[in-house]
Image (cartoon, rainbow, N blue to C red; front, top):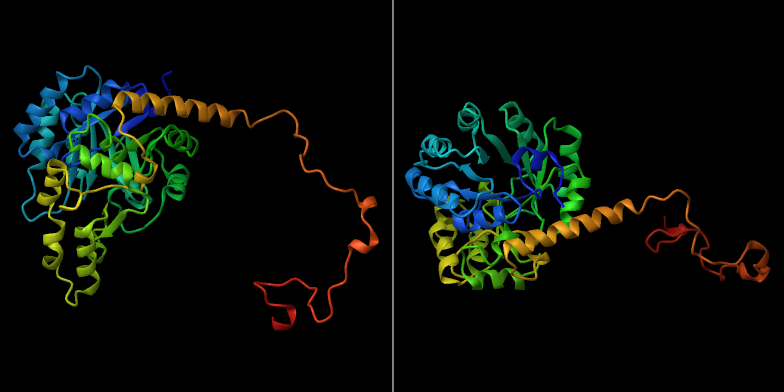
Length: 369
């Protein structure tokens, strides 16, 4: 049963579920599988070493799905930043018109994407309402609101989705989707009821048959709890949620104990190169890799088709259950107790001598207040 939300209408997809861009995960196999399942698959631009490599990956994805898919372009601070305009140009030249953006100073790239003919539908990821309002001024079409539960860059505000989504509903003039902590149809139904037009999932899609990462990493996610993540780089205001292992614990130790606070001290622990190797060699302890608290809700490794179909079914059931809570008459209470006329006078016992019969606060009698 197709969903009718602003997201499904704009993108031409059946289920309002987006596979967010993930470094070293967002390849054609992943994006095509999600799009074929009825959601929106997304390639990660910077997973490709050059813009021309991205062009090849886009063309490869087109051979694997006839359904809409998008490209993620994340702009991060770097001494030698990638050629972001060149990546954006390839996206446009290859006819992609759905782009997920994230990161710092996205204005020039967003302007480029919106100036295309036809213009791109831009989904921009934000961790605060303030940043979301700035993105609205840049002309984005959707906001992806990332709660503190999410994997990767969580921002510095520590606001979880239950509050953040309601703030988005109250204050944002354009549609938004919910990101961080979603793994099932009940989560999708909850997000829709909180005002979102769909959900974004990363960690959950990592744990699927088609995800191009080592099977042992998928097993590590299944075996993990919601408490098995670590926040690193907070000292440098680049807080990132990662899977907890000996490397992240070492990074946190340096971060807490360093007297000078130089980034060079922690840099060897947070090497992206070692993190990429994790997905290849299957050793979850080898380096740092992103994972969200949603790991606690993940218990299997399905195909993308089975996962999205299950989310669709669960969401429909949850929405129908919510609707069934509304009735025409107030239901009769199920609590059976004695009427006042049956209470014996002796039931009202006088407090024992020396006991304070007045209300107590945390076990402290009136005489101690």
